[in-house]
Length: 481
Image (cartoon, rainbow, N blue to C red):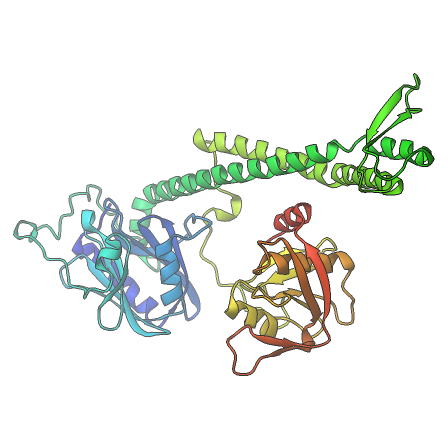
């Protein structure tokens, strides 16, 4: 239920001192109209809920983290970019009103997070140092850039601050032995509805993800099946190659077909085999054997992936049905859990995930790909080790690619081909589908002085010519993280 002005005042008095001088270490948006700030204060971590839901507009501390969607909404992403890591300078209520201001100092300087807990018009807004609106949850872009002004109360609403229409259930008497008794009372009263909203939000988000996954899996299956069906046409080509091998003396260049005895058939019938007139008899024989090897490769590599993709699609259909019947529950790791201390900082020797595209080669080695000039620069000159393999499409704009190697280790050939394929894919040579990729150790790559980020000079490079191969690309994409 929405809080009255006096209840908000009581909550602010209860939590303000505990939160002051803390810093915002995480931000979540468990439902479309609620925000949770994870705040680290000396010796303790708090979770502050700010809800702009018309029926449950309120703020208080939480004892448990709520359910959260896998992908943060755009409002949450904006706040993470602007105020994650900000210091809390104070929490104050507009006297007599249901509006609270959280004063912050972020990287860009002072700012404020304002919670208008005003029932149907409830909103959450981020203001800059001059009280210009940077972003608003409900009013969206229409207020962005405008100066913030307190909502103007209508005359007939002047006496409604103390009795919110939706507040039909009074708060329980606070338990005085709790550190934050008023927050605990509000949480007990409203947590059921908030958890239901969060669960519904997660369910709908998961349904959208599953539907998207079904479409993607269906497209992957169609592509794999097309490749496998094409290769299946070469199933008998080993037989044709053997028959041509036995009859090379009867063939001459320029023939478009040859008739031979099919000794693989007990009836020994005659069999006419098409030929390429531009090729020699040996060339035609080799061509049939080569195409049969394509069938064997498809049966060895594509068929298992096709079977796996079909099982995944079936599982997605099953999950979609469960979500639509409201029989789905969030994954264990997404469920509410008690507020805990943040994990200890990683040591400088810990593996760093980085913001880059990540893949795994056929040999199990990690491959990293920059997304833009800034990431290329960071990948090559801050992330890569001197012995790592560095690749780039030759003579054209594109991504830097790095293969993580143990010191002194040589990259396997298949790993080089995998990494070169990615360098080609994320370059201007992608449209042609083929081209030359250079590679060297990272220690032979230098920044180009006076040039934009990502521009380098390379020495002791080698080159490999690659073509985009669908089977290789499918495997790499499945390994991406």
